[in-house]
Image (cartoon, rainbow, N blue to C red; front, side, top):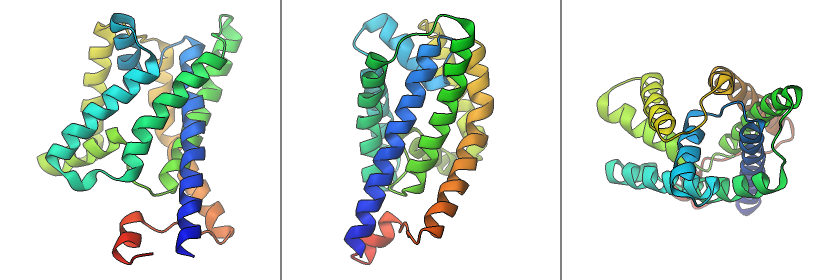
Length: 215
């Protein structure tokens, strides 16, 4: 039962990562502005080359190293898998998807991308294999400096956005739309997936609990 449950978790996690990455790629190809972290990734890509997905991995690795130094307990298998595969799938979908030029299709890509991003994030979070690199750092900083998660997240997003914008990353109307919509959409899908898995009799056990109880 434990192995079956773990396979469910991995399957749910990777499906979530794929959907999340597709959403991110669609938002980028909409060419109307992207989320704060992608502003940074694209800014680095514009200045230094490589690929957007590669910069996503490099930035995530940097974040993981900082988090590990502050509190190594926050790093889990899900954190590392997130770092690697989000970047890989972003590059894959950017290769496959065309860039939208007509305004109608740009906004269609933007809103569908936001929906998929929220759906995928909600799914991989529900898999409960650990927080992503950026969320792990956010939690560590919140604990270290005794500040609310909301304040830490806002500070991190603003700093990343400013640096990315200085590097030439795309900050447009889409950046604002993503910032406003993505939180509520992720929250909606977390509740939706939780309800669905419970209704199907699928129990997602916490990874640390499984380790402690050798499940």
